[in-house]
Length: 178
Image 1: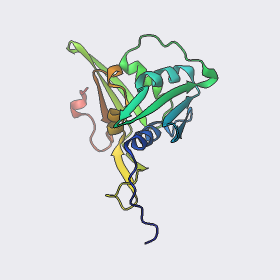
Image 2 (image 1 turned 120 degrees about the vertical axis):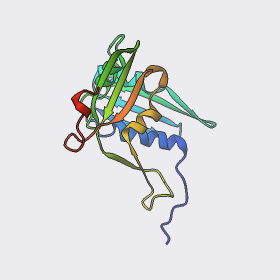
Image 3 (image 1 turned 45 degrees about the vertical axis):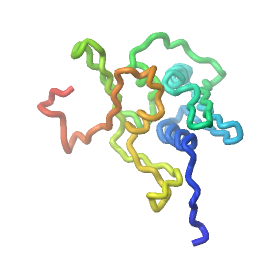
Image 4 (image 1 turned 30 degrees about the horizontal axis):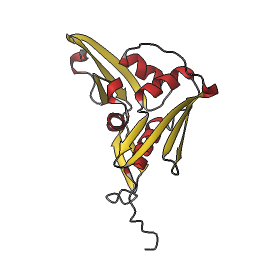
């Protein structure tokens, strides 16, 4: 019983853990967190991907009286100028070669506004977060839930986060949607 932990992860650590869960398996990305100055640095190999991720993540996240500062740092400190792109294109660039991403789809003309569906792989995501409700201290969730928490809402208007289906189990209704 000496190894029982009763300390909870603060919310800014939860945010860092969510970003690590979303991008930590991407071969082009490395994430560092410094607790001394409450900063997270996201190092990205490809300039286009760095620019897209910099648009998606907030520059800072205020949580109570703590401000987590977030920096996206491209290789050679050079961002590309991806210009004005659709939300679909933005996610396609940001998640290129990321194993958590399935695909995105854009639907136009239904309600005059474009609706973008960003679809993540169909798997449960787990990360350690001092969760007292879990015997291992883990949080178990889906990528779609993490995306809704970490991405800057002003950059992703009209985006719906989804979890992919297993084709062999369900398939598309009537082969039509979406």
